[in-house]
Image (cartoon, one colour):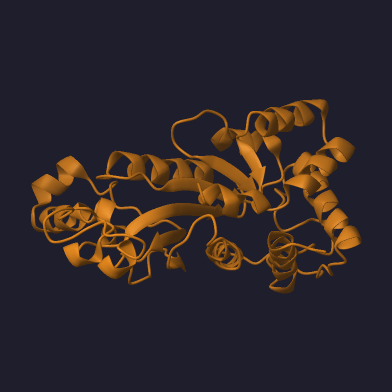
Amino acid sequence: MKTLIENARYEFHKQLFTTNTLTVNNKGVASNADTSSIPSKKISKRIIDILVKEQKHDVNIAEKILGQTLGKQFELLTMNFLNNTFPMLQNIRPGDWHILQLGNNNRLKTSDFEQYEHLAYLNELTAENARLAAVLGNDYLVAPDVVIYKDLVDDDVINNIQPVVNDNVCKMTAIRKVNGGKPVLHASVSAKFTMRSDRAQNSRTEALNLIRNRKGHLPHIVVVTAEPLPGRLASLALGTGDIDCMYHFALYELIRAVEEVGSEDACEMLDTLVKGKRLKDISDLPLDLAV
């Protein structure tokens, strides 16, 4: 019997194929491969072969989608996977959860959350004062790819089992709806289809800004990717302090692919990332977010 997350993982992979996010061109090169790297092409193609054979997916022969469309599709499918899993874990992480693809065009911004609402005021100041803007810059403004947040809680819910709060106490806590605060950001998910050096650093910059500019609780900060090369995964996954962890869209298949067609160095690097708990499978993400 298949489980909730197992089914969601299968559907995630299926949607990657049906939306032409993950394709193979007429030369046999996968859309998540670096065309200038032979190891990247070999590993990415082997991952697809495994998914097609064992999960019975159909891969389309098509040219890689250009521009930002590919990245946006991967963000959307990552959001869908989380929507199909994390809110279902009410027994271990109850709440009225919202999972949205944010980006620069969404009406919701980072400053709409409790920990970062002061950034809206700071942005107004720098918009009106060129000298202040030159000093502070705008690096504090962050637009994560996907966010998870929770609605504030009514007193009736807080006092459901026993009297917990009243008008005399808990007047400033963020989670209490009557205090008039903003929703608390629970997680920031950076979804990067591939991990070229510039994209890896964008994720790191987003993470560091969320850490430095928060007031209060630090949200989960994670990265989801389909990058096939262990060395490029390591450029962001190694070390601690900025992101919680990196999650691969098909880690089990990646491990097999690297063992079968990768180099010894690639195998060692991937083993280091996995055993060091810096790289996990996408299926691990919902439960990790429940912590």
